[in-house]
Image (cartoon, rainbow, N blue to C red; front, top):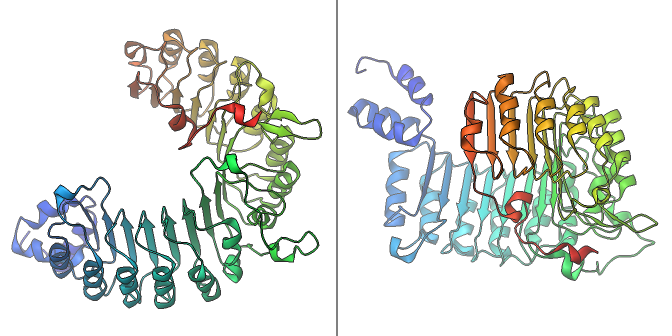
Length: 485
């Protein structure tokens, strides 16, 4: 390889994606060592960085064209040496002039002084802070003021952040198109309204709370006036990707305005949002003809004029989706705390769910806890022309007969079963006879054996271990359903 030109070497190196392979390549010769150092633009470091500042400095010197850096101290203990601190961020900001993308995870020794050094990174476009306990609103304001090109900002589990001057500044600057806020107890729905004009340019927004948020109820909006609601009429016409998780929304709660003002949505994820209004959701679906991905995680509450105990959306929402969203390709419907003895606790009927899959070009479908779906519903799904991937989780009414029906689905190539305990080895025999599946995953289905899944698909993953309820339903903290009755 000594005779290869530098452009050709550069092209070869670009096609190598794993760090271990790049490290091995650099040991082959001095020429490759230098060429690989010039080409490498991304590093991921963490607990092995010791002594932290000195090693980071040497990495910056060796790789002069770094543009993306991830520093992750997840699982760190004091026995592994001192973490990277403020001085390390100063080194990074001064020795990496091309830095555009930075992620800091579990970096407990970096405070406002250190994060303030990022103001020297004039090309910084994306910043992600995951569990940064020493960083406050003051440090974030320094970043907002100094990093004029910042377009993606993620903030997760930053408990010292208690005010949002930085958010107001970013909103006025208008450069941010991606904003993610998770588990920051000092930031409320009302605070996010202060993003102001920034909402007009935002393309992706995510807000999540992981706590027993339903116990205390939503905090009151101190400035709410029923006769003075224009402050909630904020435009977000460019928003394409929206996720709201584990929040309570009522008419006077700030983030509810999003559901009424989005018209360009392509991806929508609502995880256990309490207070969804079906008429608003129908209007949302009718306005979002470009919607491609929908994830709804729902639990039963007292709904409607009769105060029925069910999930808040019904087949009317599914009808609106089927009629108004002709590009819908991915659908997840998860139902939690719905009793298998009372299928009516799920607002969607079997007929409604089958109708949706038959009406839209859905390629990926995940049904979790869909106790209103039985084998007859599987027969209906088998006529879905576009369905390629089906995942069934905690679906207690589906049996081996359902497996027999699903083998007739024209385009189905991938099937996942998780804790579907009425499916047995006989159902796997039906799949094996069809020789249709490319991929089969079986997890926690106690009546299915390892022997039965062998040969049922081209690629098979099997585990007899059951998942925790929280993991199965995508919730970090759970209470019993009696909370909602």
